[in-house]
Length: 310
Image 1 (cartoon, rainbow, N blue to C red):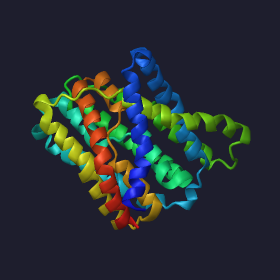
Image 2: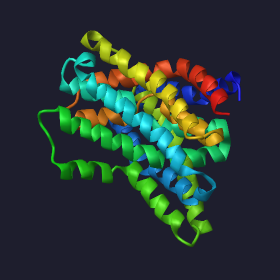
Image 3: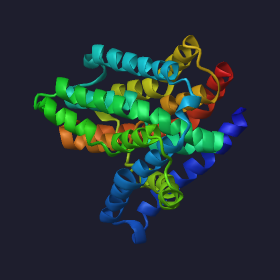
């Protein structure tokens, strides 16, 4: 798979994001309530359905998940640890650091699933769902811990557990795993209901990503913006490639894993920042900056990474 293939796969993703950005600024679709409702529909219903449907029906036994999980989890933990060690250097205060932290480790699930499907068709989408089941709980736990450890207004461990367990993406993956392990398959009628809902998840989600992009204001947080972007778009992918190779993971599974580690941070990070006392304005800038930069870095990072991963 060459550079041109990766760019071609990125075109519809970028187009939908740009369309959402443009629609949000037209009189017909300028309503904040409309986009808030669309975001809730995508995040709480459509995307969990997509993850559930793909995790429930994929042949998990066909993949060696242990080495794949280690090759993705360990670099993420390493990036999180390094960011925590240098938190005074990359952020002016604790709320700002929680945004930099999220910007350094979280990923945009909509873009990850869309790009995996565009590059590797149904196999890529199935692998993306499995990788989501590995990484979504991890980054949510780590992000929640960052708020717990660095903010003055701390929350109870019960609240932290509730935040992770009730995450709709975590629930979708968990229910999919349960159904996958059952000795029966999903009935055809159920799939006929799930399939159109799953098909709507990615275009609606990408439109919302574009609509949610805000004006970029660097100001006093320039260092945090640069560090979070460098870690998420360059350092984490590079370490992931090394880890996957060290654990003997190659082929499509490794490539899809790299996609998730190389894409921009998640729009849902803004919601967490706003709800838990982080710097929401900085988080919005991080999302916008990384989403724009990733359109340049992804072809380069994935092109090189795919060659190394076979």
